[in-house]
Length: 364
Image 1 (cartoon, rainbow, N blue to C red):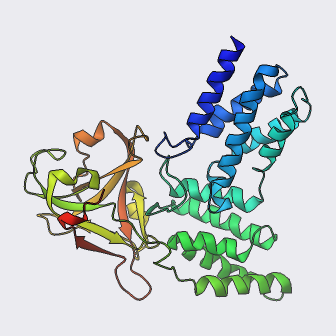
Image 2 (spheres, helix red, strand yellow):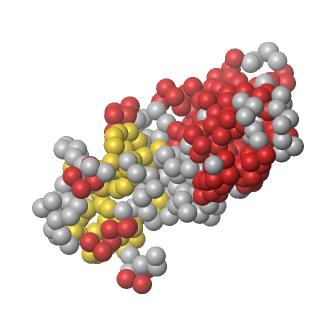
Image 3 (tube, rainbow, N blue to C red):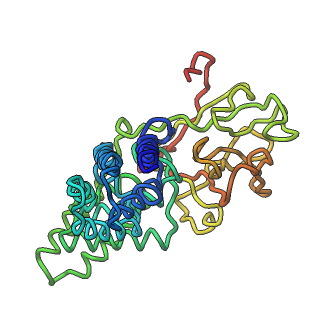
């Protein structure tokens, strides 16, 4: 029986990390599968049958550790609860030498104990990304609420002043989110004023950081917006009842239900998904990107899907004065509703454009 259980565990662990999952390793795999298995090991009930799944867990953790192009991205998975459990497990493993492989487990776990910036950057990523989305290639991020954004950016500045992160770490955050860029610039300006006549070293550091951030410009070649938002004339009453012939926004997976299609090409640094309840708190620089060329301007919206293995979120459009989710989307989604927003680039140009999709462009 133990051999059967052990083999089953190995299979589960390998499937979790395989490409059978469309998003790779699930967002909560560490918390709900891998760490509980480690905890069982630390309870002192290990036997020779455990060896195979001990090794499988070690291999899976190592794969997770090296699977990121940027090591800071792994902070996305390391929630405060997971970090606390990791510390507990490392201590527990240190007292368990039933299997030689246990030392490898401790070594693998310690690889996830990073400097403070990684944990903080993970907080930013969890605000920006849809559940189940991988950090690489952020695309259009979710905007962070004003109060939360101020809190996170202040924490970032504290790390900088305490020499626990670098100016390039600060740039990494600012380059992903223009609103964070603005917040960081404001905080640095306040710090420069408060440090006058004080700590010369801190003043020099803040001054250097402000100079870099104020000149920061995104590279569109490095972060090219993918055409994941389309518009077109509906060929049927699904998913929009009574909308045959009307122009609507949609996910490109539904392209066969529309004609005269256009895709939205965007600069992801200047566009974001904003909670509809936060629209009234946007500064004057930010505007909703409305669907034009229709009888009445419409918001371009997104909602998270209940089953993230099918899709993380889906696109729809709705009248500005009558927010409604099509029933075909509503029953598979969950609130809140997000609205596509943006602000002009520093040169005054729009951060997006609609481009006609030719039949030959349907490459997937």
